[in-house]
Image (cartoon, rainbow over all chains, first blue to last red; front, side, top):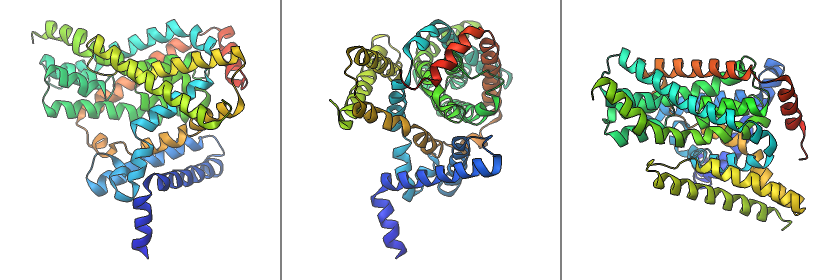
Length: 255
Length: 135
């Protein structure tokens, strides 16, 4: 009986994921209402539970894809994978007020630039403090502080060892998770209320997963604006880190 | 044109076009990656909607075909959260942890600083835009 049930979910992974996530969201909305009287968004709670499940999945399977490594939840891997994530993000563009986005264009682009250079400097400096004194290490870790995609892409481009790549990815993932978790709480501090503010947030916080999840948990209406800038972030980072940033570090540290 | 699948199909075409252009751009400038494909796709969709509203050809079912996926956005993000490598993140070496925490904290502070400079008029316009569901 249990085997049959298990087979149904294994063979209908994505559909099971829809049911599972849907029920999770229902539970989270209830928790939001009853435990926090609506002060903490249901989506924030759901995302936190999701992260908790990811931890459980990682511990249970020793894999790197959280809950998705657990066989019956493989469908969750598809539902939350890059393709669907990007597809859903793109669809939110339909909610964008073009005039608002255009108004914030320049400040958004500036935020994008700062959001690439500053994390890189911080990451590389902290790497230096911890004893990584060569250009490749400092650059790879610095790139990881930009996003968890920029990190390994940069590392691969400049010939970093797999240890460094892993360190780089971890830095990016921790950053993404921090942004995901702390954005709702820090929203007031960051004055995160208007499209322009969201675009600045997207450009500076950078990590697409962090920004979009953080905004989802704060104010769903801001998601497309944050996404508009955050999605260019990875591209800019992948462009600047292996080139300008690396060469600068190399010049300073002597290779 | 007034069907849900056409809305979804057009969304899909914009998505694919954007990613393709992102790949092309990346290859052209030697960035070794996709340069903002999703962002380009979003821009295409924003412009497309402007065009359709202007020509009066944006219809309800078409919009539903796109907005359904927008509504699926949060559930997709929850599923995404469930597959993060949290174990590695928590186990991460001190460098990774400290670099990540200092980075995101400084980012939040800079964001706070910049957003405080938004003028009152700008804020009001922005808030009004979000509240306006029919645009």
